Length: 146
Picture (cartoon, rainbow, N blue to C red):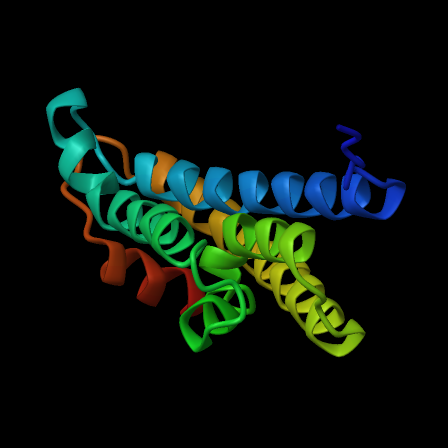
């Protein structure tokens, strides 16, 4: 029995692109949230919201693998917080239109750049206020008001 590999150069590019941008997106978010806590005991509760988002992305990808062209997987493959998991598997298992691929790549890249900018500002502000109890929304408000 002969098996053909679906690992083509374009699928490798898709996997690398979504893996790197997804990794950096969550890294920037975790860094900014981690800079807002003063004690190591508060770290788990500080990063819990984004951990839930990552878990939801993983579960969406796992449960939608049976229905690759379903509406849930189509939405998950475009939303930047879930596309880094959903789009590579969808691309390998079915035909994805170039518009959807470009939209998912563009939104993920734009969101990563936006969160990089915000995370740098939050991290800088959070480290300057180390030792004080700082909320996420207070940090957001203070980085935009100079």
